[in-house]
Length: 406
Image 1: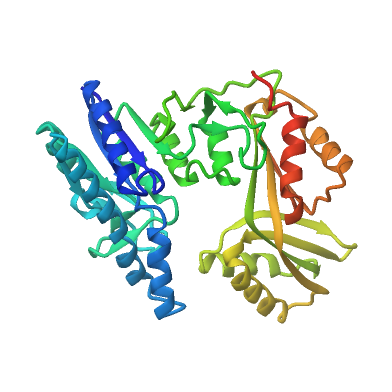
Image 2: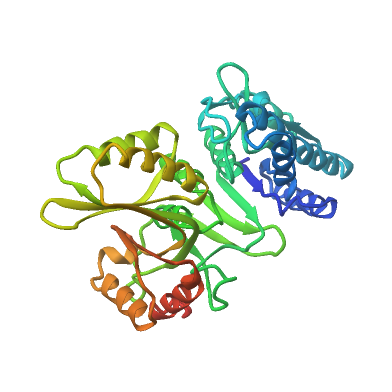
């Protein structure tokens, strides 16, 4: 019998009725002859509710205690699902992350998985049980409860599937697969039957919210097959494959957008000074990640340095940058947290020229200004005004003919 790991997000277990539906989905897989491990998120809205409670007590609550609080959400959902399965005559057992030995580092609120002990889960499966595991959480070397950050249940599921050498890790969500763009932004978005791991990783890191980027990276590193499916409708979903299938007609596979961007620009840094390296070191020390980054010449002796961070890091990043500019000779510092990143992604870029030219031509024709550009082998990203997000996605989706059937 093959092991199938199925992950269900907060929307999928958002009510008792939906938990009953998840139970039926798991039973269907079980009756196909598979051993099933289900990984659950907290019921939709629960993590936000708990976070708000903590913030009402203290605007800057202890990260360790926040993790202790938030981990309770998954404990509720896994117990309820187990009850639903047992009621239907199926043996099920719910387990918290520390009970399966899911070890993480001690970076509270955004821990990384170090190891998963598969022994307890294998024992339960051998006894015929359906195993229901709490996603999003782990335990550090001191026994403290940790959480993996938003979307962390996806990573939990992939790590567990890898530890169990599962046949496939299935991610059930409120959409029926991966689309060429967000259907809420462009109604002409089309579901893709398959996406390469490379493309999916770029899409996830560029704003596509179907999968957490860390989970895709983990799956790619361990060659774990992924499939995105809907909890509410039947279908094959989208398979995340290891094959790089560059389509000749469509060098671009998807257009994504990321709202939570903020831009910081330092103008007129004296050449030869250590400003950039010192700034990046300071930002790294407080776990602020840089997304887009560029350097341009202002004149023969000075440069401009522009970068983007996540919007929730904007104020802290600005304070750090401002404190450093006071120690150096710079002309100006300014920032903008009303910008968004729009990206064109596709394996076909490897074998097609002119993608960048077509992208900029399209945006220029629609009077959309570009403030920052970054490019990789299979991705081109531009930073535009927040107000231009919808129009940028729609015109680029049409320009690259992603609304047509491949």
